[in-house]
Image (cartoon, rainbow, N blue to C red; front, side, top):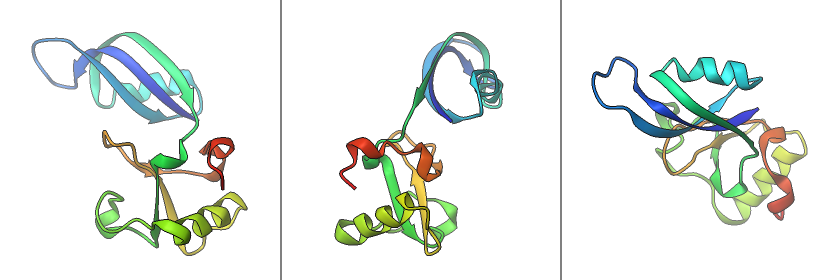
Length: 123
């Protein structure tokens, strides 16, 4: 499951001021999501967990692995080729492609078809 988490805290190892953060994590439940926050942040308070489905606009599709394993580098598929690959992904096949949740704020990771909001996709 994917959670969008907003909280107050600071980056791990930082000294000084506390800030508000909003990040996305993948975990089986809220408790595991909370523990994942501590991999990158300290002194976490006021955490709010919102389970989300990935909007189709945040899905990058690559033929094979993207350059350096970074989906923001290189060329994601567009147009009819992207739609055809997404239909294959939705149907359970994905041999030739990799699919990534890649929000504009960074922090991309691979996704499974069950994590996509297909109802709003038109695919």
